[in-house]
Image (tube, rainbow, N blue to C red; front, side, top):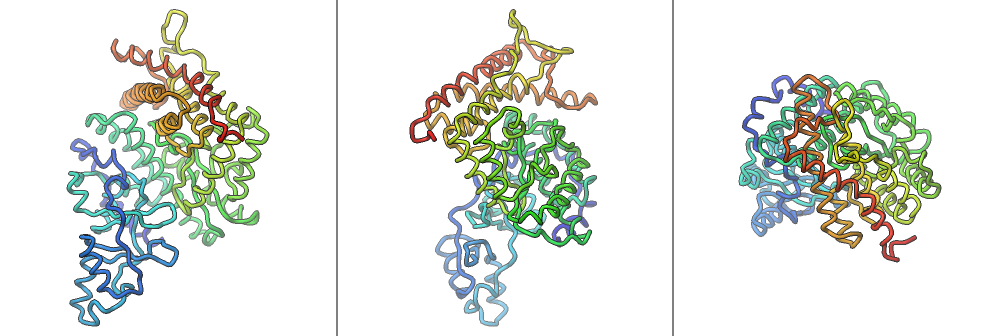
Length: 501
């Protein structure tokens, strides 16, 4: 909790400069750490002499090496500055073991983390090297300030680490409240609506992870002690898919390795987490898809049994919330648990054709977005584009991906991976991707306009605000979305024998 306390003390002078949004460099919001890291990473054993680390730097042309623990996890880092300090100290020089000169513990970042968060973390910590790790905390690459500066990313905002430094729900709410300004700035930079939605999803994940850290701190302060077992916090739905917009609610779950007697501890943690998120402006899920609900809080074995029951006895009324569960991604704690659950979930679904058909059927019962004359069906002057446009595409892509053994969570990635496997033509996948982009753009622009006018953001769009060309594009996109069930039906029917149960 030391890092939390340091961040909390800084937040008064580290408040985000909203005026900087006017001069935003959008590059860090459009790319991830894995795209800019140097890989493979140079590594050395802690017991080896420091001279070996120095030689490896020269050989690889790098300014740092990582130090590995026995299990391959990140244990430390040695930089050029560490080498110089050891030489000038005069007590053994380069003959001392690496362990005596390395920095530990090491700050690192996940490979799929957005680049703006890596930049902000390096700036706040004052470091020039940031190891990039996988779900098991094994180093897979290295970010350096030199490489990042070459990408002209030095002016990126620090919203990600402002969230990491928030000390309570109110401070999280301040950061969450700045999202519309960030979205407007990105749109002025001509960042696509789907890329913007990925940024919003990433920030939603950051907010959720920070709420989890604050909940842990509350547990410690209340004398509840540390977690009784390894655990992982999951986000589901649009945040898990990387497709969030500006009308959020909570979709989260929790997985752990404890026994039945540990559930009370995790229930307390989850209740605090969900309360903090509500205070942050991410309201409670009306459908109860939250970790404080026992249905969304299980051990790994419990989740596996739950999934097995879904696929063995699928009933439409029992599958509410199951669809967005399959969008989950681990964001805090032991992410290896999320990986193990993903493998089980994908395998189980792929061997259950009835379950897959029920998942796909959810996108089939969507009313037509147009009347007999081809006019958009509106209520009170607006049309629900999530219901009539996004939902069929998202639900269909999910079912098709699971049917063809894809573990992807993003809608576009699911469509592309499934098409590449032969489920349907790549042209069909591209058409759905383009249609989704048009629909997302229409919703996002309406949300920004509504927020500016003092209205709550939603998914209902007023077609009258669109020009003739934009309205024509939207009608065409909705028509393509309406064809999704047919494409998905073909995908489920055309599975090769090797994928059948």
